[in-house]
Length: 358
Image (spheres, rainbow, N blue to C red):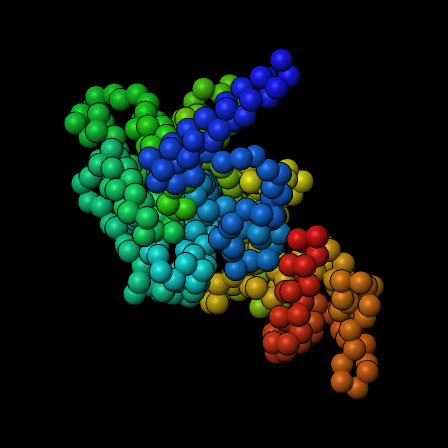
């Protein structure tokens, strides 16, 4: 009896294994896999150039997923998306980045400043196409498997087929919600199979259904449900050349802080919800300033009053060639040292990655 049960179980296991192999062969990818414990650090990601954003999202945006950046105008959504585009081009040199400029406000100069290779960027600037037509174009492009990142800027300006056929006096209901929900449902398996990130930039508007006057985004609940990561952006304080905060009435600020909140993430732990990065208007994202901020958070730079000390992952103080401790009075002096010293800048970056991964 025991032997018969054992043989029966072996036959079932053999048949199941054959079925799995057959399904995976027909689907042309491993649709069915054996389970296994994977940490968030094992997920393949496209990093940002900002160490602070990478710290918040455990390394960046997960590949093969749908992502949404939303916020009010001037909050930093497009800038962050272009930064991600530049990093995707560097990481996946054999694939293209596609930018669908529905607002027709794309600036090649600003994109170049942020590191985007504008010559190899696939730029789509629609004129009279409806949301449904643009979504079909996006699906066709992603389905080629030759795209690492497709950005739609923005979902809020798209017009549905229903609304396009009506006059200004006629009312329409639902906006692009139905089309966007269907689009995101179709995009999920394509993104997973081709490892393409679909990034939708969205605007906020007044929530007409809220009695408290809240804010909401275009697209309805279906789109939100199908996203893996949703980030909300807000414009932070203005700063001067040295990174010091200045008043809003300042005539010529050098940049501003871009506040970011992780509203939803299925690809990282929910323990890093709020943060910001430093944006300089002439040079783009301030890598050095963000690097220092993250190092301070995880104790790779120790602050004592106005003094900043560089230490290794074990807490030992770094020394220069003359055996003097690497201590700097004031954050600007530390930033200048790291900006001019590639060896210690790369060493600090490696130590941050090592500490975060452990």
